[in-house]
Length: 137
Image (cartoon, rainbow, N blue to C red; front, side, top):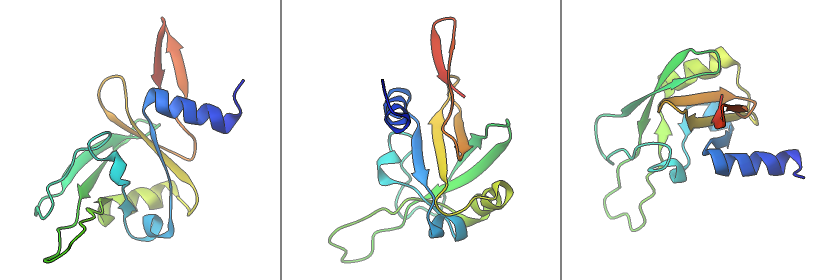
């Protein structure tokens, strides 16, 4: 038998959802995206590109949100490049205000069974079984 936190970890690995505990920067400025999400959950933006990648997410109520993903450009002479991916302020901040998100709360991101990005706040997605098929909602 699993403890609740152990079960969440097992399900996260099995069902490929990603969790982020929100920091002060995430709430007040922009969502700092974990580098490990790039290429797995999210596309990899081109460093130095003038165009952020718009990514549409659907929340647990069925409402759509579009956040723009970008990475910083390498600085001249920089020996170690850190992309620092982020969702830009405008749309992300509107989501934070609408959901009344606070520092320390979590967001959960995943691809649903139809290939759409999903986002859920505070609680991980629920695991459902229907006709021997398991999916997140």
